[in-house]
Length: 360
Image (cartoon, rainbow, N blue to C red):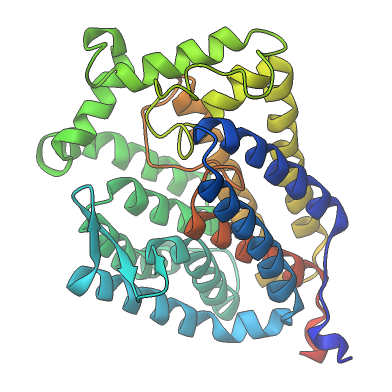
């Protein structure tokens, strides 16, 4: 077998990802109301995600570096296709339906933007100066703008954050970072009055005062907090959750699946799950630091930070610590495109951190 295309699997990472998938399967069975069809779909997606990890880790790292502009062009083209003839769900046009498969192209941005920005910085060399940062952000604003038109303001903001992660790891000056933060704070009133949709404003007010509308905009977060609190230290036990199983929590199998998990497994179970997420993040950052190639360090580190960001935001929003956003819990929430994208990202990470560029 050609060793160039042999899986480069990091066993500690894989041994942390699989338990998360197993816990998600147990929780989904309860959160879905014991829906067998949904369970089998989830198991199939978990298996396909593991296959994606193996396949993507088999591709030499230099191939990812060479294909960076092409991946970016494909991602932007798919977002344009969504804008022209995408499939609408709940008032948002975010999906492409090709008959036998329906997917969300904006998920591909999680990978294409870090790879593209890292490739540009690798070609240029040196720390990011104002010119490089401006050009990188210009490249990022194209897909971010297309995602904002869907409308998906959260996804557009995350797209810019992916680029900022790469720039930060490349050595972007703290003065420039401070300037970005100041710009965001300055633009906040403009975003609130002229950019944000009514439902997005409702999420912020719901976060600040959920009790002001307990049967309306605040209902979901209040029920989520009840579920988490009722789990106590050790939880109610598997299949004994009431808030998630009986339908009190909307989207209890997708974005709010952590609420059902915390209700069943309690504080101890939640601590175990969060420890797995922290371990995965730390492990990838360690692999990135040990890599001897600039491109690999940037991409792997940015993907690790993005992974942690999604886990942090999801657990934060269901706990009432952050506003509600469309952020699934990695390898846990029910959903095909998000889980497969995470599998692809971790396959790329393993390839970048274990490949030798000289033979690619």
